[in-house]
Amino acid sequence: MTTFQTRRESFGDGLVVRVDEAGSGRPILILHGGAGAQSVKGLAAALSHSAHVLLPTHPGFEGEPRPDWFDRIDDLALAYLDLLERLDLHNVLVIGSSVGGWIASQMAVYDTSRLGGLVLLNAAGVEVEGHPVADVSAITPNELLALSFHNPAAFRVDPATVTPEQAAIRANNIKTLYLYSQGSMADPRLLRRLRRVRIPALVLWGESDRVIDPAHGSAYAQALPNARYELISEAGHLPQLEQPRQVLNLVLQFANTTAHV
Image 1: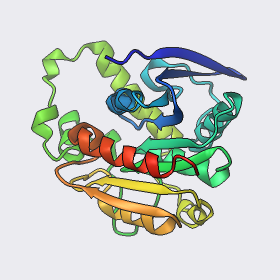
Image 2: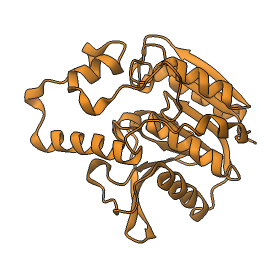
Image 3: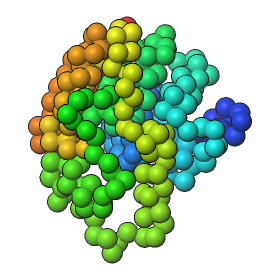
Image 4: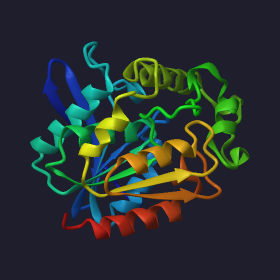
């Protein structure tokens, strides 16, 4: 069982970021989406057997503090670039799930000098005409399950087992998600800016995603100059949960091909 060590990095002006880390080797930064850090922790644990994995919890998620001024995707992207600089990490593989993929993409638009590759898992962030992103703030947990998973029954939770504290954290996570995205899960400028990102990219997409459908994956892959696109069958918005072995193998293969970028 992987043991993560927790550190808290202070960046001033009230900004403190929790970072869980494990393993040694090439640095991999994993950025979670609206489902929180637990949704990528299994992938992080598996990758830590051969890499130095860093898994931040975005300020405001899971009860972590967030200063009032820190409220944009840009703020997160710049904070994580600052983190890589502070730790003097190079050739970092950045993996982003959902809104974490948006953050990862924005990091790469700003500065790839410390990045060696980009993995996008059902990433938010781009506008695709005729393919709106589901508003997860306006639906019930069961409706969200139906949109998020190829096999939602396997992930259904008995509401009677959910504590008031857990329900409050989930509600606050969604509120924080929409705060960072400013009410829209896309930046209309991002697609045009992705042409600046020339590092290798792997775009992975659950074929059954009804939160952010695969047309968004195609748009990302076409906009990134050095991208490969892989659809994952029998998976939805969180393929790392439904098809963990396939996702892990694809990420490891990609990591090997970008080891010396």
